[in-house]
Amino acid sequence: MQSAETNHSDFRVLPLEQLRWLLISYSMTGLLYWPRSPETGGATSGPSVQGIQGDEPGRLLQALRQEIGDCQRCRLHQSRTTLVFGDGSPAARLVFVGEAPGYDEDQQGMPFVGRAGRLLDRMIAAMGMQRSEVYICNVVKCRPPQNRNPSADEVTACSPFLFRQIEAIRPRVVCLLGNYATQTLLQTTLNISQLRGKDRYWRGIPVVATFHPAYLLRNPAQKASVWSDLKRVLELLKEDNQGTPL
Ligand code: URA
Image 1: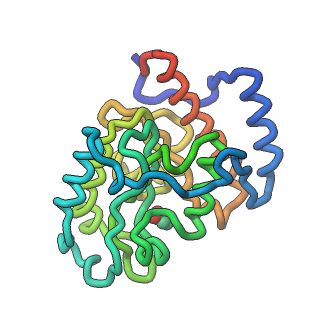
Image 2: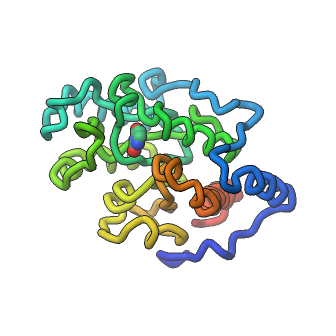
């Protein structure tokens, strides 16, 4: 049994992976460039939640979406165009959680499809994964006006649905993007700089907190930290693949 907090510095990699991460870290120094995986090209295509039938997490997510319905549980419904529930595979081994939809997400009804979303796509591709095989959602499902931060009562009204999304999927790892996701899941007021870099757990699921892609766009110097966090995500996924108890 692992302790509730484990330092990332004991991360072990195979030689091939070391080479891969070395190349990636070269390509990211100071630049807003994230390598594209040759298979995906950072594409965002793939089955959406709505398209998947028959599996238990899929059914649970569909039921949850129906339960949210035309949500009016907080004031955000007044200004939203579209409620943004989530996107990706109900069978995902990895779930990303962001803060709230922005303008593009509100227009399209999909999480992370704007500028920060394109960076997240690149991060996923650089991990050797496709967007369609992970699941992406937010703490609040409706866009706050002018992209302001969600208020405490909005988070309180909406976060039970986030918790139930994660419970429905039961992924191997949850990657929390930024302060709101991290503070909401870990029930803390500490900020992301204080929380990242250590393994944490939410209801028994390993959680890796990292900077939000929108923050990364403004602070590219933090890329090395984010890569270190993403490597930890991969390591946790790999450990689980090998049957090692988490
Ligand atoms: N930022 C978020 O936190 N979520 C989105 O869906 C888009 C941008």
